[in-house]
Amino acid sequence: MKEQIIFSMKAPYREDFQIKGYSFGKGMKSACILGPIRGNEVQQLYICSQLIKALRELEKNGCITNNKEILVIPCINYYSMNVGRKFWPVDNTDINRMFPGNEEESTSSRIASGLLKAIKDYSYGIQFASFYLNGEFVPHVRMMETGYQNTSLANLFGLPYVVVRKPQPIDTKTLNFNWQNEMTAAFSVYTNSNDQVDEKSAKQAVAAVLRFLTRMGLIKYESHSGYISHIILEEDLSNVSSMKSGIFKRLIETGQEVRYGQELGYVIDPFLGDVVETIVADTEGIVFFSHTEPLVNEGDIVYRLIHRLHE
Amino acid sequence: MIENVTKAALYVHENLVIRRNRICPEHGYEDRGRICVVTGAHGDELEGQFVCYELIRRINAEKEKLRGTVDIYPALNPLGMDTGVRTVPIMDMDLNHMFPGQKDGTMMDKVIASIVDSLKGAEVVIDVHASDTFVKEIPQARISEEFEDMMVPYAKQLNIDLIWINAATTVHESSLASSMCKLGVPALIMEMGLGNRINREYGEQVVDGILHLMHKLCLWEGEDIPVKEPRIIRNDDISFIRASESGIFMPLAENDTFVTKGTVLGEMIDPLLGEVIYQVKAKCDGRLFTLREHPLAYEGALIGRILKEEKEKSS
Ligand SMILES: [Zn+2]
Image (cartoon, rainbow over all chains, first blue to last red; front, side, top):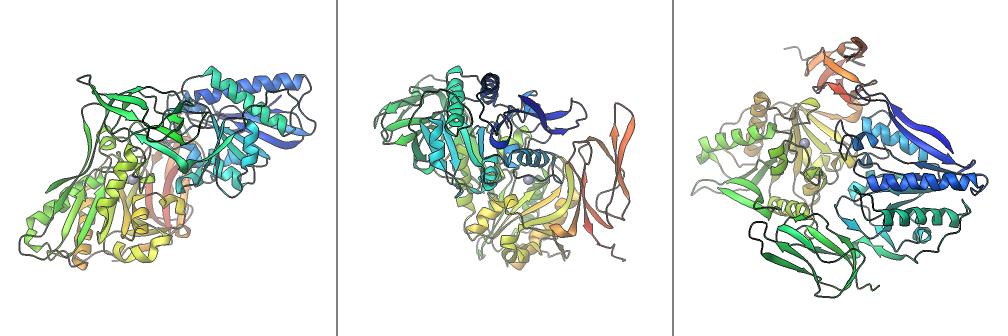
C-alpha cells in the first residue's frame, strides 16, 4: 500500500485539508474507489476503511494482479464530517455538484477539479454515494444514462439491482456524470444507510467491490457469485406519497415484496394520536426505498416501489 | 388580496404556505395583463423584502393608475427565510435548483410545481435575489445565453446597472427563471446588494425600474421615471478576483468604484501571525462591481469582480 496526497489546501483555523489516497499494486490505473463527498456519509467511510483493510491483506498475499493499480480514497470531505455538516463547511456548497470543477474558480470547484484530475485516468470508478432523499435503499449500483454507461459491467458487482437514471440538468455537475464523460466506467454504489454504520450492508458492499475487482481481473479473490442484478430504469419506480403529515410508522422493510393494496405504513396525528392515514401499495412489487424518519410531511415520498417485480 | 398559492402540511401542526399579494386594477378599469415579482427563494437574501413592500406601497398609493394585475410573492422559501438559511431547511437543497418541480416528487417538488403553475400566463416574472452573504453586488439582471433575445428587452427597462449574459447553462438550469422561459413565460433573475442586509437605495432604484417596465407593458399609468441604460456584459468582460491563499480579507476599496490595474483592493491577513499574507490587487482597469463582505476567505473564494475597461463617465 502506498499513501499519497491527492489534493491539499491551507485553512486559516484548521489543519491543512488533505485528500488522501491509498494505492495497491503498480502499473495501469485500473480501478479507483471513492468514499464520502458529503459529511453525513459515515457508512460510506466505514465501507472504504474495510475495503482498504481487505486490499492490504490481498496485497500482502500477492493477490493484486501484475501491472494493475487500484486506488482507494476513503474520504473526500472529512472537513464537513468533523463539524457535523453535509456540505462544504465554509459556503455550504455540495462538492458533488461542482464537477468537473475548475482550478481557477471557487474552493469547492478547485477541490472537484483536483480530485477529478487525479482519478480520471482509471478505467473503472466506484463511488460510495448518497441520495438527496433521506431514507433506506435496497443496495444497488446506480449509473447515469450518458450514452457511455455500461450496465452489463454494473451487473458484475452482483448486487440485487442496477438503476439507470436519465440525467437531469442538475446531474450534469455530479462526479458520476463527469467521470463517465472522462471515459471512466463510473458506478455509484448505494447501501441502505448514510449516517449510521450498517454492518450487514457494509459487508455486502465490500464483497460487491471485491467481486467486481476479481471479475475485472484486478485481484485474485474467491468470492460468492452474488446476485444476477435486475436492471431498473429510475423513471419506472413508482412513488408512494403520504397525503397527511405527522408521525410516520413504517410497516415494511426495504427489499420486501408487497401486494397491491397492502398496508405499508401509518401516519399518526402528532397531537391526538389517531391514525390519520393508512398508506397502501398502489401496485405490487418490491420496496426499493423507504422513508425512515419518524416524521413525515404532507406529500413526502415514503416508499418507492419496483413495479411488478417479485422476490 | 392575499392568496395562498399552495399549502402543504409540515410534520407537526403547521402548514408550509406560499402566499402572494394580488393587486388588480380598480373597478371599471381594464386588466391588460399580469406581472409577477417573486423573491425569497434563498432564505439568506432579504433585499427583495423591501422591493415587495415598496412596490405594493407605490401601486396602492396610485391604484387608479393600475391597468394590470400585479402578483407579489415575498417568500418562495418561507422556512428558509424564517431560519435565515439559504437552502430549504431539513433537505438542505437550493430551491432555485429544483425548478420546475414535479407533481409526483417530494413535498418540495410538489410545492415548486404549484408555484410554477401559478406563474404561468404572466407577461413577465422577475425573481429578485440578493447575491449571497459573501459578496456585495450592484443591481443587475442575470440572463442565460439561451434566453438572451427573449429577456434582454425586458431587462433593459429595469433601471439596473448591468445585464450579465452567462453562457454556462449549468448556472441557470433548474432555476425558476430558466424553467419559466422554457415554458414560454419571460422570466429573469435580478441580483443586488448583499445577503442578510437590505440596501434601501438599491430597492428604490429597482422599484423605479419595475414600474417603468409595467409602463412599457401598458400595465401602469402612474409616474414613469427615466431609467438607466444598463451595460450588457459577458464573462469575457469580467476580471474575476479569487483568493490565491486562505485568510481574512480586509477590503481597502469600495464596491462600485473605478479602479486601475494594481489598485490594492484589500489585504489578506493572518490573525495568528499578525501579518499580511498578500495584497489583493486589481488585474485591470475598470469598475469594481462585486466585492467580498464576508471576511473569511479560503483559497478560491470570490473576492471581487471588475468590469474591464469601463471608464468613469465624465459628467
Ligand atoms: Zn439568490
